[in-house]
Figure 1 (cartoon, rainbow, N blue to C red):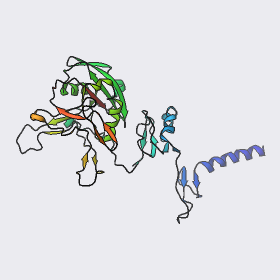
Figure 2 (tube, rainbow, N blue to C red):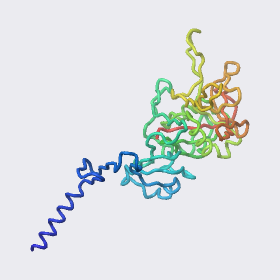
Figure 3 (cartoon, rainbow, N blue to C red):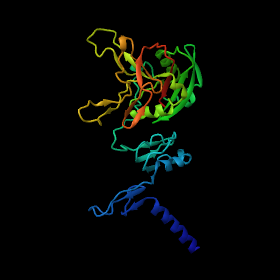
Figure 4 (cartoon, one colour):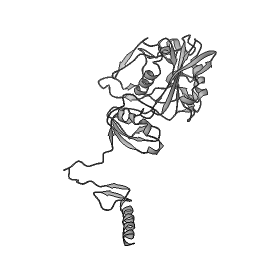
Length: 318
C-alpha cells in the first residue's frame, strides 16, 4: 500500500511540475517560459523553430490538417512547386499554419512585397462580391456569355484568393459582358496589384493553348465623371476594385517610382478617346522583362466591345 501511495504521489507531483515549463528559470509564467542564459553577448540567445525547406514542408502537405492549427516553422527556401497550402511560402522566413494554408509572420525578406488586398471598394466595383465563393465551386465549367460559349480552361489559388480563366468560342464577349459574368459568380474580373500575383496567374492560367491566339479581359477599366473639366483626372483608368498597385522603389537612379504593371509599350493610351478597357494580349504579341521575369501576355486597352476573340479571368476572395 505504501508503494502504491508513493507512486500516486510521484505522478501527482509530475503533473504539477510539468504543467508549466521554465527554461533557465524556476518560476515560469506561462506554459513555456524561456529566459536567456546569458545577456552579456557571450552566447547566441533565442528560440529556433523547426527549419525546413519549402519542398520538405510541401512533402508533408497531407499531414497538416485542422489539428495542426498554430504550428510554426521556419522555411529556409521556397517550394519548387506550390500547393493550395504552401502557395504563400514565397520567401524564406517564419510561417504559421492556420488550418488550411501557411501564412507568413511579418516580413519574409528584404524585397518589397505587397499582399493581395482584402478590401474591395463596392463604390468602385459596383457591387459587393462574395466572401465565400471559390473558383473550385462557383466557376462553372462552361457558360454562355452574350450568346458565346465560354469554357473554363483552369483554376489557380494564390495568396488566399482563387482564380478561373475562360476561353471564348468566338468573338462577341465585351468587357461589360465579362464583368457581369464574373459578378454572377460572386467574383470580379481579376486585378493584379503586384508583380508576383500577375506572374503566378499568367504562369498557371494563361499557359492554356487558347490564350496563344485569343485575348482575356481583366479588371482594369476607364472611369469618367461625365461632368465639367475641373473634375480630374477625367477619364481615369484604374483597377475596378479600387485597389492600389504596389509602388516599387527598387529601381533607384533617376527613374520615377514604378507602379506595378505589365502594360505594353505606350499603353494604355485611350486611343481616339474610345479605348480604356484592358485585356491581356495573345501570347508573344509583345513581351517585357522586369526583375528577371518575362511576361508574354502584356496588357493593352481597347474599346469595350472589341471584335477580338476575348476570354476573361475572374478572381474570388476565397
